[in-house]
Length: 172
Image (cartoon, rainbow, N blue to C red):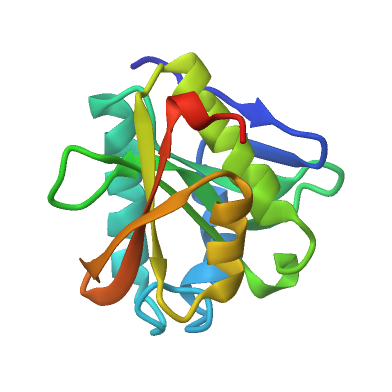
């Protein structure tokens, strides 16, 4: 993979991570236990390691995570993209947006852009998503996009549901 592509939507820009994004991203996502998967604040060293891994994913694959910013203001509100589901060959949709972005439709907009990239640009046959059992808002986003429940299990060390969307079901 060469350059990481940039994707724009009506209100968002999904773009490569830059070092200067770290403080804003940490404030929106990694420093807020309400936002992180494990519901704990992520230490700085772990944030740096995760971004290195996300950039490496682009080198290994034709996909990865983008910074999500509001196009009109440049405000970093989180990250979204597609990545390998830990311990599998599945490709997973993931999005983490800070609380300031909740309830505005940004998760759906970012997720739709990621799915379009996955299905239309790199021609994936299916994309999965994991959602914590208690995260009704995220489950609603996934269902609205056409994902269906496949099974419950432990993903990334937590009880969660595996949701699936086949390319034939996209767009929903």
